[in-house]
Length: 166
Length: 118
Image (cartoon, rainbow over all chains, first blue to last red; front, side):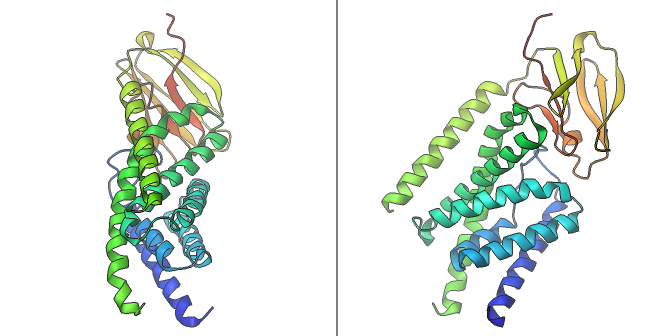
């Protein structure tokens, strides 16, 4: 990997991490497990549209690991890991169909898949289907959060394009 | 708008609409007073809140860690926990069938029990 590329990816990871840490300090308006704005995913969505699958995975994995260590909530890693894996696979697939103009839509797909991954892990860990009753709430909150982060990422992608000379 | 965007958009809309309908049907305040507390999916307490006096007790997790459960005026909530995220504490009192109190780190679930028999 070229140094320039590596630097860009590291910069994006650092940005995502900063956003993640700042968001930890926001009061949680809807205190249910898994309901979150997920602002750091602005970077994920942006990266999905600007970099290769491998590079996005690198950013997301580094951000998740460092985020878990910095926040001291390592047990949350299983949920965020499963969510991120499902979200990434889904987004890399829908990216082929959804053009730049509708990034917010693929972001919604990603967010809902992220919540789906979390619920699956929660069912496995808690060993009870009681947590599934959260799923509809998570879908609604995922759609709202995904649309918001998607719109942010869409603005960024537009802005960066001419700079890159692509 | 391409065909792919339309299809994905329609699927997302359908899922969202279904979720909203389920939430509206399931998330009314429940007048059921029977609750169960599950740990690792095993019932460890089965209580009738209408007959419970105000009290609080600590549930220890086998993996270490605890949740302080509080019963007050026929309502149940988790008053304190030693986990970092405190989501179960912030969830507040148990109100509806659709929103159980869940502590993921300690695999604890408080929900209304299925049988409403008194």
